[in-house]
Image (cartoon, rainbow, N blue to C red):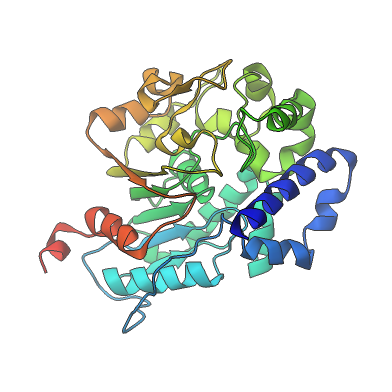
Length: 343
């Protein structure tokens, strides 16, 4: 049943992408109840697989630990049960303030905007919420899930005031995706769908779809560089570079990259460790240190890595199959201050 639901979501995404060329389909789908019902069972929505037992919920208290900002993934929402339970868990576990960023004025709008709002617009809202929260004015740690990690990354590069100190990316497609979820590029049908999605016309027309903002077809790099609205910019892949992206990203105290070993949502799953398909090839996957953006240090990834400030983890299952114990292990290692660890 879970596999069928996952395929249902994939078919829906493909249909949305393809039909979006023809007019008002996206607008019609935005508030459909059936879409929201499907998303609740989506593999993109965080579901911690162990009960969370907490004795208290801490809204804010003086602590040696920095506050934490959480950013959900595609189809999820800050007000959904999984994200709310996580906020309460971390607030209690770290004895600190924890904020769930909501992109929109309701749970439904938040989930819908993760599909239908351009990333540039989402990032502006994200940055404004951070700036408006006085609890974060001294800096904060950030944890993202799936697509939400691209928002955190873009915030670091474009704003970072107040600054992100430590960034944990859980199954984030940080180097983009080259195929639809559950649609491996080696599959014939998926190849045909990907060929349509990667055309210049599609990049132009479907710019309003968040997922098109980080779609990177290795066979259509020229179209991607010319027409994709988001990823080429934060990768500093275009001819005109932004030097501040490198300075800000390299200023992170630590970057934690968590990859799902059997991820069927993100192709290639090496993107979660900043790897990518080689330009021109779907059958060649480059590790992080072989990519052009690493070798040229275009946004500070190499600087951060050479300084010993990147840690890699891998979970054994599929996308966002994360246990509470795993999550707390990462939090204890990277979000707890030295003095807090000794108490």
